[in-house]
Image (cartoon, rainbow, N blue to C red; front, side, top):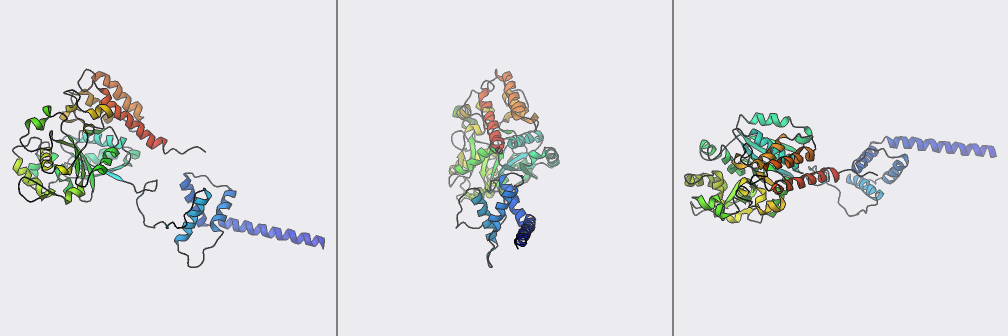
Length: 447
């Protein structure tokens, strides 16, 4: 009897072992378990395979209780998430709502991803200059950007071809749309010839880009030395009546162009420069503007052509003059940002007169007067050439910042070159910031 008893015990133990082995094998192949394991791997940022003991604990935690009849479909998902929170020592809120099943574009941190919008108008020989501007925005910005490029018909395929040649790691950071040059009111040929070729196109952006809420417009001769994100954040500084932002045309009224020569109304004491213009297009489209033509207010689109007809014989700088006239009569609609966000040769060729740039460095460099392409202001040309020629895959400190720093030695005998810290301070700070944001902060800690 004693022998028979031992045999029975051994047989029972063997049977239990086989049963556990069979159940364990099936559980390991269960698709729901695989999904949970994959979810945890994604959250941990690791593809390592859990140990058998860890897998056993996960199985016990997630499948020990069966859902009763009538339990909603969201509850197993909720219970799995609560199980993971408990395993990691996190507190669980019993009253937390189940996650919505509606798909939304989110960043890798779980928040809706904000996309910035930037517009530029390119005609004539502005292809390379525009591409260099786009390159500077992509190199330094942190959020994704949608570029709205308005170009003459011959330039459009050239933009497509050039942008396709950029590395995928760069093109993944932005989208682009190319539009023809169009004017919704008045004579198109007349608008196109106003000041520089196609420059008046910017006046019609609120009318054309009806699906865009906010936008940064820049001239082709603009370079970002700081993330566009910082300029974009100024939209949050607008009060309830402000719908656009620009920098003063000059800091010193005695040497400013508008204060000395303008034959039409202009904003403030020195006027404003439209080469960098931040716009809330939704507000522009919905606002009725005061004007000098009729007692009633007019919408943006209805205002443009009559305003041009009235002042066309008195304006020198085309669309910029029209904007000055609009905001002269509607000053409450304009937000003024400091000169370092639109730094031009005028800020240094008559002596340094942009205090913000002296203290913080240039944030956006505006090379008007053609200074990127001649030797009149070599300090501006040094920065432009370095960004234009920078190979995307190279180290920015070695192949961008150091060449600029070195070549500035040849410009110290010029009015703008004698203050190199104005040009170098912000770009050095920006490179460190981009490196910290994209490399250090998101690097996986070693365990």
